[in-house]
Amino acid sequence: MKWSVIEKALPLFADAFWTTLWLSAVGIALALVIGAVAALVREFEVPVAAKAAATYEELLRNTPLLIHLFFLYYALPVVGIKLPAQACAIVGLALMGGAYMAGAFRGGFSGIPSIQQESARALGLTRLQRARYVTLPQGLGLSVPAVAANMIFLVKETSIFTVIAVPELTNTARYLIGMYYRTDEYLFMLVVAYAVILVPLSIGLTLLERRVRRGSFGH
Image (cartoon, rainbow, N blue to C red):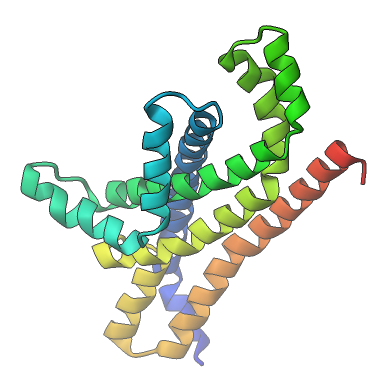
């Protein structure tokens, strides 16, 4: 392994690193919003919307991100909708991630004692008020472990973006290996780059989970 090769490739990997980080952050943020809305719609059995949310969740969770990206990038232009590669990446990650986050949130909501929901209904709280004062405050805390696991999963899924030529980490490593045939150096840089993103994220989410557990259960 030659360090001069690594040093020369650092600028390209730095750009790819920030691209991966940005796409991950935006995609995950959107996935959290989509997942929370889908979970609430199903939790409160909103007519029509609940069935649509259930269909969305099952469809997106049981099809690979690769297929979603192919559809967004190659099929939509056939009907006159052409999105940039990075926009396709964000939309694909957000939609698939939203389905996984919906499942995580529903798991948290189901952990709320039913007596609390019954009491809220007895007090005359509307669905929106129950969501605001009962379901979300407790359910979000209970869903932290599953949400954290999904966030790490979604960051790793950004490697699939290489199929639509997004200049993220995996695509950059593939390009450099194809150009200069220095597999060891570029794969080493790829592993280190993902570790720099995922290790702090994992530690931070673990600390958050412990804090939430301590606040909710006292241990």
